[in-house]
Length: 322
Ligand code: F6P
Image (cartoon, rainbow, N blue to C red):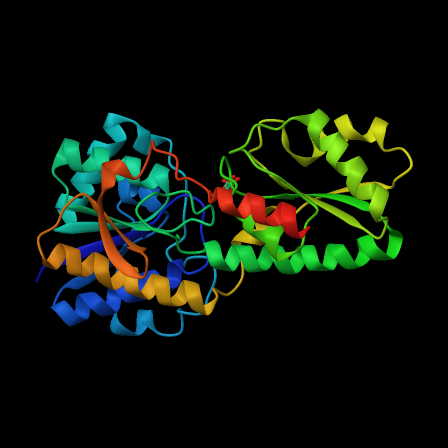
């Protein structure tokens, strides 16, 4: 019986479990045996495999985190590390590997495939949403909602004290979370890595905003902004806003946890199934994604190295509505 291994790698994202479940159930559907790899590429190098039983897929669709655990492996970046991983796959009799993760995960999978002829399929799972080949990545929608709910709470206390809050959200070097949570929470300013940050312009905009309203002001900042994140920006702005109480809040890893939204569960279920179907159809070195609600197959090597564009119309939108 063909054996298909599945692993989760890099930063975990809500919905990874739903994707693992879909891989397990789809393997059963196509008559394959599903094998789990714990701790991503680190576990692959160590041969940390789990022979899944049918019951392992039960009761996990709603759970955040990843039952397979995750890791960022330095050793897998080396030729030697990847050789060990390929040897483990061979020893275990694995025919194909499904990797659930982001651009670093896919870069690793691509090289593993090229060097050792491993059949690799990628499933996009990252809260950052920074992968081309899928309109959304697994976990992005949940992270958006988690961040937005947290920002709503910050708005309450900001209103109560009429304060100016700088809120930093995740996204490594991408502004998807910042832009959409900013719109969803009615932020007055949004600072993104995709747009050069001009602090003078920000100072002027803030002054204009504060002139007409002193209720509360929220500035959403993507952690990867070139100006250095919320703490650095607050240091630079503070001298000019002494009349206002300024506070910084960094949302951090709260954005990676929690039960996946319905949207993420459905996306993860679709993509887990499509990954196994891709193997069944003889595909190799591709990522399965969803674009305009249709399944999209993209060569894996095209999914990293190229920056996915944010929707610039949304920047215009938030400026009109703030
Ligand atoms: O890629 C997901 C992500 O949460 C990024 O938004 C963030 O920059 C990074 O991972 C944090 O990684 P770690 O949890 O390893 O510090």
